[in-house]
Image (tube, rainbow, N blue to C red; front, side):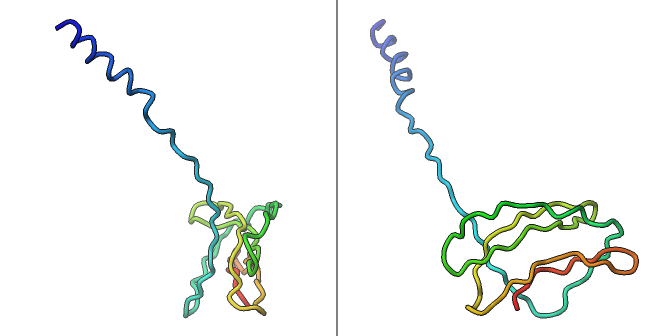
Length: 116
């Protein structure tokens, strides 16, 4: 009886090292710009955006990708930085026009990046 109790206590200890280590997976996220029909709604922000951050451009994930610079996005209460990313060029001759803030009477309006 003592021996079976002893074995029952030792089994969980023996199995402790049997769990598999989690695997680390590194992924690269790319996005594709999707255009929608119709005019975009402009939001007038009374505070100017902060200065644009200088970013280090990473290596392109493959041919046909274009780097889009980061920008300040208005959340309705404050600006948050959206980092630059790689996007797939929709056609060989397409040129990316970076998004930017434009001064308007009474504040600032963001003009979203788009393909020409």
